Every structure is written in C-alpha cells, then in structure tokens.
Amino acid sequence: MTFVVSVVGHSGSGKTTLIEKLIPELKKKGYRVGVVKHAAHGFDIDRPGKDSWRHQQAGADSVMVAGTDRIALVKKGPVAGLESLLPLLEDVDLVITEGFKRENHPKIEVFRPEAHEKPICLDREDLIALVCDAKIPTRVPRFGLGDVRELADFIESQYLQAERKY
Image 1 (cartoon, rainbow, N blue to C red):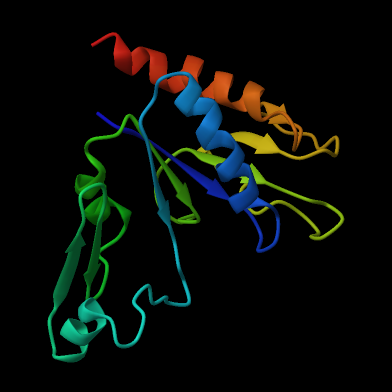
Image 2: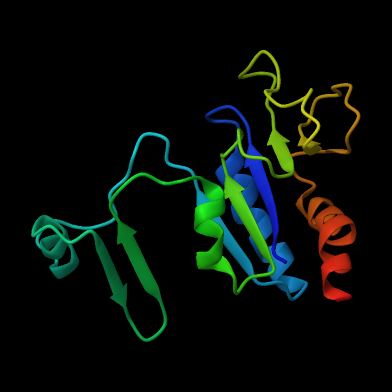
C-alpha cells in the first residue's frame, strides 16, 4: 500500500519549496516518490498549436502523450478526489500531495507566522508534523524550515519502513 502524505499550508508558506527539497532526501533513501499538486484554480499544460492541444481542441476527452522516458495525461471532467488519482501512481512508495487539505490523509503543515496569523490544520487529528521556525505549541513533532533531512527521517521511520517489511 502506498503511503500518502499531504503538505498543506497557506498560500506562499513554502509548500513547493519544502517538497522540492524533501524529494531528493527520500530518493537518497531508495524510495520512489510521486507528487500530486492540487490546482484549485485550474491549469493547462498544453501549448497552443502542439498536437496534443489540437487533439483536445478537436474534442478528445483524454489525451496522453507518451515518450521513451515519460508520459503525460490530460483528462477533461470533474476529479472525484485524490483517491481517484492514486491508482495512476501505484508504482511509487510514497505520494506527496501539495494541498488537498480536506482529504483524509496524514498532513504536514508548513507555517510562517510572519505571513499568516495561525496554522490551518493545528487542531486536526490527521496533522502529523508542523514545519515552522517559530516555537508554536503543538502535539505533533515540529521541524524547522531547514530540517528537511530530519523530516525525511521522520517520514521514513514512522510510515515507510513499516511498509517495506511486508
């Protein structure tokens, strides 16, 4: 079973930066990592004029671009939630999501008190860690913004090593 953890926080808190530093630490440990970014305001990965864009413009409901070393899939329609996306990432040990704060998966919150009044998930039962340089009282482990290796060790020891035993 793939472990899923959501990195959450206010806009501009450093979620993307944390994830891009966390991935290499987990890769060094031998884990295969997938990422799902929640794009609440929509997105478009195709460039006008390219073949896949033209296929979408022609009315295709799904377009997949496959190269020798990567694939991309664009599907039109509503997303049924994170659970509907996870089967597409079944070949990884860990899925890190950016966002999806309302989904029922363990959460790591990134918080910067200089930018926001309070954390958004501090009282949630599914919060497993807080990443913040301020001394904020919390029932979960707190890691500084630069403690990426320690956070990777925490994720491994608490959630990934148990999965490897089976």
